[in-house]
Amino acid sequence: MAGEESGASIADCVVEPSTKKAKLEVPESSVLHPELLAMSAEKRCEIKEKCLTNVPFAHYQLPVLCSPDHMRKVHMECVEELQSTFKETDLFKLYQTIDLGNLSESDPLAKKLPALMQLRSALYSPEFRAFIADITGCDTLTDKVDCAANVYMKGCHLLPHDDVIGTRCVSYVIYLSDPDDEWTAADGGALELYPQETPGIPALVPTAFALPTYNTIALFPVAPGVSFHSVQEVYADKPRLSIQGWFHKKEAPVGVDEATKRQLAAIEATVTPFDLIQADDLAELADAELEGLQNFINGIYLTRSTMEQVQETFLQTGSLQLQDFLIPKWADLIANATVAADKASKLGRGQTPDYEAGYDLDSGAWEPRGPVYHQRYLRLQPQQSSLSSSPKEDSITELLGYLQAQLVHSTAFHKWLCQVTGVIPTSFRSEVRRFRPGLDYTLAQRQSHPILDAVLCLSNLQDEDEEEEGAATGYECYVPVESDGLGDVAAAAADNEDEEPIQIEAQFNTLSLVIRDVKTMKFVKFVGAAARGSRWDLNVEYKLD
Image 1 (cartoon, rainbow, N blue to C red):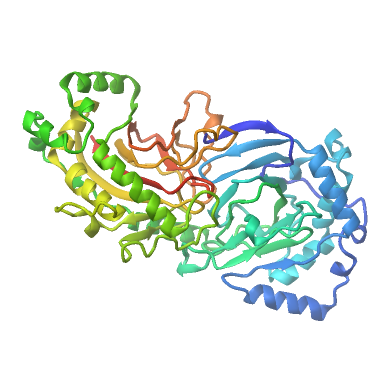
Image 2 (spheres, one colour):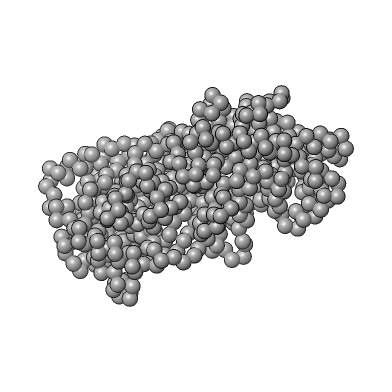
């Protein structure tokens, strides 16, 4: 659930900045690798050149950070002493501990973490800050301490963002996973870096990767509209332990407002306009129209008595799910076609996804949708959803396009929806979506007017025995508005005790009806690679006065 919290016994931590000063009680030379600060000027220049010329933007991964003995002590302290809390929002899924930046050296916990506290002091020492400023080409870095420990277990992830908050200047990640269990690309959990598709707007596919190799530190300058990165989903059943932090400057970076405007404009450019619904089109639902709907919709939902009962319940709750919505003819064809499409794309059940999987389905009928800091999924192109003749029974493209054109866009369906919800829409828009396992999601989105959501889900993403913590994937979630920002939108609904989030699991052949007011945001949670297949759905939004 968005914002869900639960205790666990493995290390993790929050990433709130701190104004606490780093105290250097132990010489950094006894913590950091001996060759690091003793590096020659020539070697520093070589690293700086590599860092600044790396693509898609400046970055570097130092192959060794600490002396071997000290890093093993840090690893053991994190595992044995730090308690973690499971956190899941629209943006991430991981385990967090306390804020290391705010951990006082007099705190009883700090006394159990001597090696970790020494590492923190060494990182923010004048010598190491000067080294980082030198190789990244940044100005003088302050002694502001800002770091946290996180653990990514199987299925955990962090979606694309650019880290631009306040005075952050250089982002870094120190990798602390089991030193005796080498991390490989097949394990997932890589740091992913995104190129710019257009100035200030990242592409949908990352082009550079940093493995979470033990005792290395990956770092990059924070740049508005440029430094977009993510943490790939962890595929292996082992913890990815790391310390995430930032070095700060005295002032915020230049260009934040301009970058934000470009990003918001890019989101606006993807918005599909609403089509007007004429008032005459919402008149009484005739028996002949009900008869026509029987070609698609389960007859139980077409009786006058059932429609009255559904409306009564919906007006009380504002949220309702209608199972077995389509008649078996369509449900069976779609079930078979979705399985075949996912098999052809090599998606689901733990397979490592190709970032462009599904692009070639039916000669490119499905277009990728971004921008990646807002959403990523495939959408059936409009010309594919105007079928008037019977679809091919083995083509998911034609089957879903036909349903969109002949059912969702029909006047009879609009009338039926008015009957079962008791609301009168003024316009609507629809899209057929595919959320691919290990790749796709939408982040929390708000709107300026009330919406009636009608979403026909055509996937079961989990097996019945998947009950463990955090196993839910690809669900729709409605949460109170928390932030208008970009990048770190978290939608942490559990912090709001007055309003419980609505979480709707992906269930095959189920129509979900939800009223969404202007104080509510909606998102589709990242679909994990272990899901049975893609989340396929027909998403319809009805604008209300």
